[in-house]
Length: 253
Image (cartoon, rainbow, N blue to C red):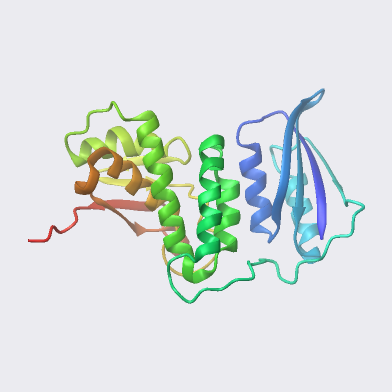
């Protein structure tokens, strides 16, 4: 079913990302959104689609959220098909692990949108993650993260001198990641305390986009000699923070 939410808030920063994550966490898709100034504050309108059995819980979570001062929910007049499952998936399914052609085209189309909206990128990213087939998700998000990371490095850090890996992590990777998540450097490892990808309940590390982005950032700074980012701990597995360490690739002799 489709529902339109109208939210009034006194804060614009982080509003769409926070409420978009709530929408997705309850099995809904964000079809479109609009944000504008109003007499009472910032007005955010979201058209969402998802399972009717989850709607009451979602409405309560949105209405009682600390960022929300006023909330209304209305159903559009047009009849819309009710999704068969909480997590609709594209009709295609490919056996190979790399993304198939339709997923690749979708990712290609998403890149300019993410660069235009950056750093407000997580709502479309979480929708993509949810809808990708399980067997394609990791490589697809790694590739997308690498592309965005390389773009950020070229845009913001091309003039930064990074003679060593430690310099690249401290002067490029850390400040770049802080544009989108809460990150800190502990020793030689990067810790992220609020990765939005730790929500599926699946076993194993799941921050594939962030790992790919770190690879793109370091690859832009050091090229083929850049270290490989590895997620060694993940909140999805019960860790307090997601931890990324940087390993040198073994050179062929």
